Each structure stands twice: as structure tokens, then as C-alpha cells.
Amino acid sequence: MSTLGLFGSNDCVDEFTPLEQIKWENSMGYTQSKWVAEKLLNIASTRGIPSVCFRAGLILGNSQTGVMNTQDQFSIFLRSIIEMGKAPDQIPLLNYISPPVDYIRKAIVTLSLGKESFGNTYHFIYPPIPWVKILSSVQDFGYPMQVINLGEWLNQIDENPVSTDSQPLANLQLLYQNARQEILTLTQKPPQISCQFTLDTLTNNGAIFPSFDIELMHKYLRYLVSVGLLKKN
Image 1 (tube, rainbow, N blue to C red):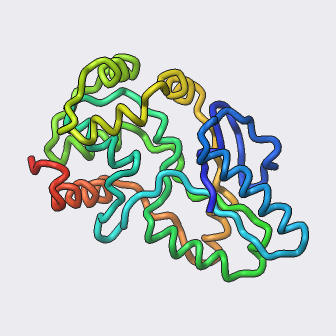
Image 2: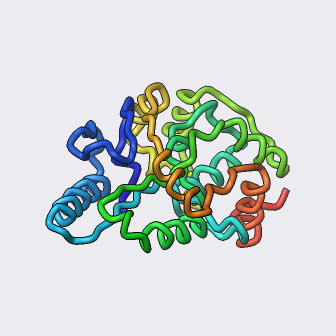
């Protein structure tokens, strides 16, 4: 299991792009380890060892129950903008959102069982989700939101002291610390990540990506309320 975080600004890739052609911009140890792991997987495949590589980004929570990872970047970001009452007018994490975890689980099993999958790479990712769709779902749920310029929003994250009682905002500061330029670059020059081969293969096996809609977002918000991480509005 690898990551779509391998890809940086201006990358234009699909499931067949050679690993060596990926522009190396990310200095995170996690991402570097995934690049090395994929390289080892490729070597194993050339030596006749059956292998399949799956790349995912920010995997969404369960599409039926709304149960989600409350400490991943998507959850922290969502809770932070609700607490602030302010959201940026654009954000690069939307380029890396993957389908719900229950769907990915089934897709991995489906693709792993076929010998024709050996040696292949698959991308689990939504096409870039319009930010307005997520903001609308949050507002429809009852949380007012002021949309401000991304640069101004980052300034407020960087400069405003955050109490440790505000866990999501404190976590967001840690996530975005010293990452301002990278965030701005990814926003201006987002990667173009294709998943067409994955979609075609899954469709041929009777599976399709579930749609990302307001109802799905509301399931996640209801879950966060139910576990006490958001105040009911």
C-alpha cells in the first residue's frame, strides 16, 4: 500500500508512469519510504514475485456509518475551519482525497484476486473535488463559514496563538508549520493524477467509485458530533 503523496506540483501521472520519472520534491520521510518500497516491489515483480501496488491519498471514512479517522488531515482540517468559522478559498488537500475506506477495502480484495493484476499499479483517488461542494455541505449542516484568501488564512493559522485546549487548531498548526510555500505551490500548480485505468478495471469487475456528495459529508459531520468532537449546531 503506497501513497499518492509521491506526486508534487505540476506532476502529470497515471498508473503507468515510471517511478523514476516522478519529480522528487517531497522531503517527508514517510513519502520517501513509500518511494523506496515501490522500487523494491518493482524489483520483486521483475524477478517473478506476484505483486500489486495500490496508491491512496486521504482515505475518507466509512460511507455507511460515517466512522472516520479523527486524527487524519481531512478530519483535523474540517474541525479546524468549523471552530474558526473561517475557511480558505482553496486548499491543495482536495487533490489527494480518496474514496471511503469500506469501498477501498472491497476494491483491493477484488483487484488482488485476479492474476491479471500482478505487476500493476492502481490509483484510488477522486477527481479534484470542488471546494465549494465541501463548504456548502458544512454550511448546510448548520455551521456558518466565512471564506477568506488562502494566504490570509495561513497567516491566521501561523500568527494567532492557539490554546492547547483547541486540539484541532493546535494539530493544524503542527501540520502546516513551515509548509506555507509548499501549500501555495500545490494550490497554484496542482498535480494531475489519473485513475482511469483503475476506474476501467473496477468497472469491468462490477465496481464503481461511490459519489462524493453532501449526504456523505453529512454522515462524517454527524459522526464527529456523536463522538463529541464537534458541537451540534
